[in-house]
Length: 303
Image 1 (cartoon, rainbow, N blue to C red):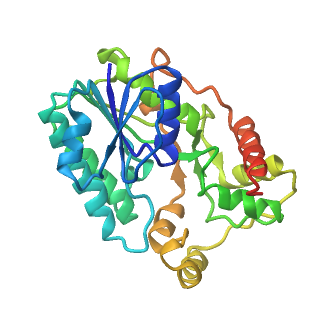
Image 2 (image 1 turned 180 degrees about the vertical axis):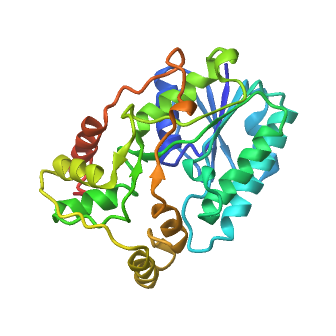
């Protein structure tokens, strides 16, 4: 079986690529830049804006795993082209190639499309997938963490200094990137009766998710520091987003769009959208995963 993979050089996509190589699954992976050789991997140069590259990647592919997408940008208008337009072009290529499976990595933010341009773009992309006529499965990951991640790293770095600012009270789920990678590949061969045309919200198995305070404390434990973790009002976070833009420009991590969904009180994966245990279950418990992630950051000199 040959799998076509987008986003293979990004955080989640790289984990999928590594897991597929471990399983000796043949991959055809999209990349913007020339990559070194990897066992069982055929690199296709191009991006989601290039229909010819997408056609080449999908040619004779049995399944398509669509991970690529824009997750953060100072310009909210860019989400539409990257996440909606890119998905539309990939669907067209997958249909032309008669791919048997189409697995789309969305986001929990698609549940609340009015909160952010990012969430709205993911919700629109989901609608395209649902209307595609393909044998699809949609996965809405919660917060994804693990080696190579730069988003949760901001919290780890803050925790090292004993201070982790939090959004207003709420709770969220999370998942280790290696567990998510296993899920995406497990869905390729799963029984159609269990996964066909279903939307799943996977997590680390923690019922009810993590309150923001619990997550901050767990990250503090992972870096070996007691922490002060105050809840900040939305207005303060909006000001911080403006400051981050002034200081880091287009590389700002905290944007006004992110503040929109960060301050929503409920990003907990719903049990009604749980992946059937016959298909997949998480292996990496939250505190264990956070400790191993902190160890990776230390080894790489990030912490």
